[in-house]
Length: 265
Image (cartoon, rainbow, N blue to C red; front, top):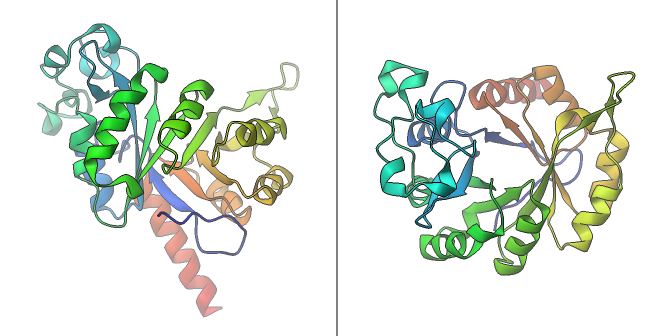
């Protein structure tokens, strides 16, 4: 099974390519996922919805308008119709003809030793179909489930108890000061009560104190979406388990160079 970093000073954070290598290629396509593997990203993340005909397909938004130019709701459209759309040309002519992938196609691309984070963008209705895909993939030990939907995450963990599952939460700002509010330890309690493996939080609200509390309870702590090198350094010092980024090549090189410099000092 996948090993996650839990404490400061133990290895490096796992770099996770956000929607694939979405900085360079159209998000949530086979092109972006495969490019993430090609640049050496240890992990990639993708978003999934359940279609009208009960297929699990990649898409961040609930509809296809932003990335495909034709506005169809994922849950109200059959996969055959969705596959006719062009999910790549908006990013560049070289990506014309990229289709909205089935999750099975993406799982097939995972190289040995790499990890795919699957973000459930809908509700628990997707879970029986997701479980079937995972069971048939032969790559159960290379998959992770994440979701903002606590019910979906909790039920996923109960249904697929061997798959690491994390609850996604975004940070909040103080209305008066506009300062980011640090995360509450209540998140840790909720994760534990629901049998989850840890948290996957927006980076801004993660403090050293909160990270220590997470690790004290033997949970893992991932973060999103970080392209800034100074912020990546701060999170690494906190012992973060993994960092989701639009630019995996950029962060991988930075952390590698930093490690090399530290060895020569």
